[in-house]
Length: 157
Image (cartoon, rainbow, N blue to C red; front, side, top):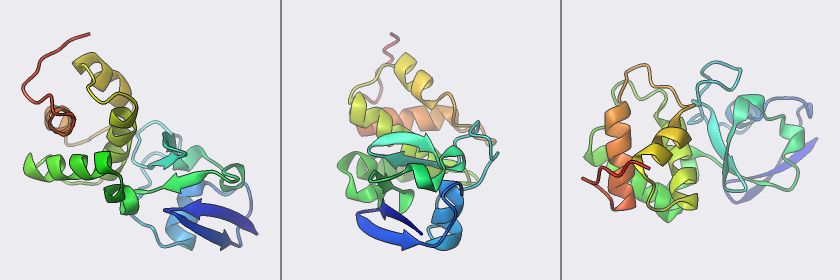
């Protein structure tokens, strides 16, 4: 039995401690917004927050979460930064297929929470491990800049 805090709720699930957090979220708790991409932490589709930090749920054993607070895409709108990013994503029509976008938004929320006005280089660095097969990277950057209030800025660090 593993106890975790997900989206502000204490949850108890009967799973092995070594089960990846991704499968605990999707299969045990029904939080299917977090996607399986590569399974080895390289694509970012499974990005969630653990204590506000972006982590790859496919590589995080649920037993190692401990008392940490997990936030998934289902609850990111409760975070003012996450809400601004979701609005920017919609306003700028970032998605094509949409499969990777939950992970993109989770990574971008962690970025803007730590660096409210990131430079282009900081955006590129933070988003580097999140892949988009539809190649909407230009729109992703534009949405991050809109959410940060730096839309139109071309500030290279």
